[in-house]
Image (cartoon, rainbow, N blue to C red; front, side, top):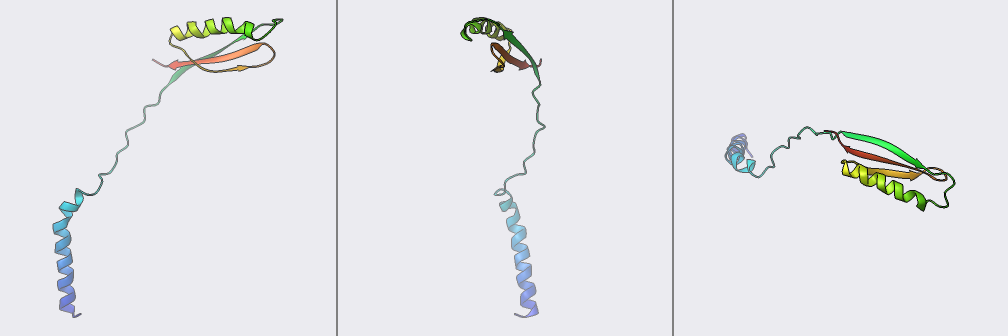
Length: 98
């Protein structure tokens, strides 16, 4: 290939690239721009019920269920609970900060 043929080939590729660029742009995905994350803030609190000298853990369930229901009516969501030792139940609530 002579020098002239090489220059003509490069010019043809350049022109072809210039002509096809607007068409190809529609085929390329636009850049993504991330929106700043909105961080949800929470209010939370934990409470416990302790009942010494009760025959079984089921005796605790009634007052705990009443606590859960009353806090739920105030917008609190039960987020966790654990039986600590013997007859102590700890449970935590959360709700979105307003």
